[in-house]
Length: 171
Image (tube, rainbow, N blue to C red):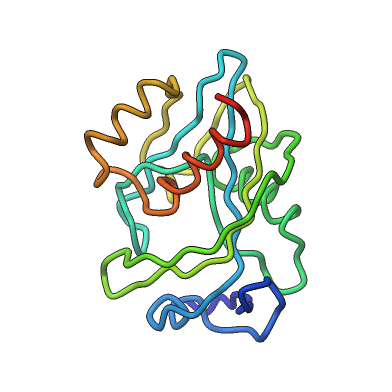
């Protein structure tokens, strides 16, 4: 894994580049983006991360998430990764950002300045099997119950994003 990610300070100012794996081993703060997708029924699209992912494999999370490449805007990153992971693109709007730090197992720490985008989509989904084990549309009330009853089934960042997205979308 030779991919470089962007290290930032707590105000998202770029500091330097770091090898992705090294940044996750040391827990250095880096830039990320996450995408939340709703359908016409108000259901949220979740993906189950491929079990082969280097961390959080098999856990359920938002439609997609990733790190911007050097020189790439977070907006462009969100669109790129939505297509790469879920096989579609749609209009997206950045709604908030937040910083979090979480132990994600396998000696990895996610410490991200995460930009969160929301979109709506109702057409065909073609997930990339290298990235996505499964996907499902979830009713918000059912998802709230499952998150409360089975928090270990979900990624740490999704638990934060879910609460914040509901605040921003009045769900």
